[in-house]
Image (tube, rainbow, N blue to C red; front, side, top):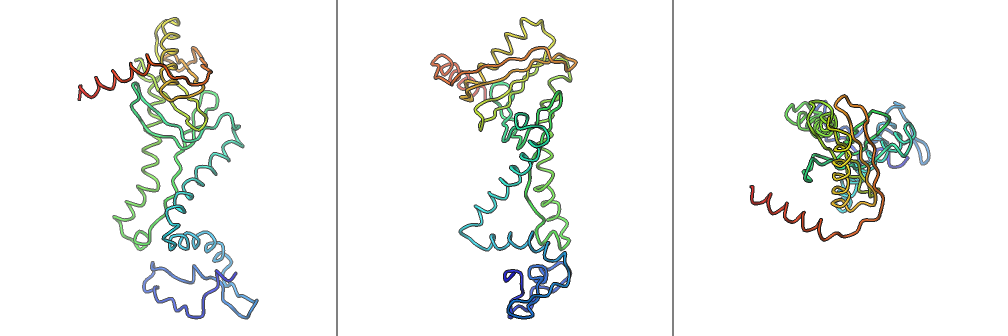
Length: 260
């Protein structure tokens, strides 16, 4: 209670215009005695409980970076835990990295849900409006919106677009999703080739990706051009160094540098 009561020396000097910081929001309680407080607006204490600790931690130069990191981690963890309650823990994956062929990164999915023939892509952002944006600064408002919303949307659309591309244009497509926290991943292969060739291609992609990610398991999913499931594969076994694969990767990286 003490933390949300206005100090006797507080005169709200920073509140000079409508959108300036108003200490009445940070200190909604008025002291009436040693153990007695007056609250004029019930919503005020709820708002202060949500808003004010952010500024407390921001004022601590030794802790501010840790606080900002934890803020983002909490957003992701909270979202993942709620989705697990709905879809089951085995269907929800966190911090999923996506790659095109040859290890080209596409982006990272904060939380991915695979449920039936549907995928839910969630990008968690913990940014908030800055004081200049709240005052009506259009440029700052656009920058805040980009950091809080648009960047997450763009990242989610890039990842979702690659997933959708696998069954959209009738061409061969491969998308790999690495789940480092669980030492596993998923490769999706889409084509209209015969089953025998699809099986060979899917197995090859899974083996390469499992090795590159140093994963203990890897899953493969082959889709038809209409989006139907043609084949499901699973590779299980602890990662082991392979000199042939390592040499092949070095040769490919050298060719790529020369091509540039």
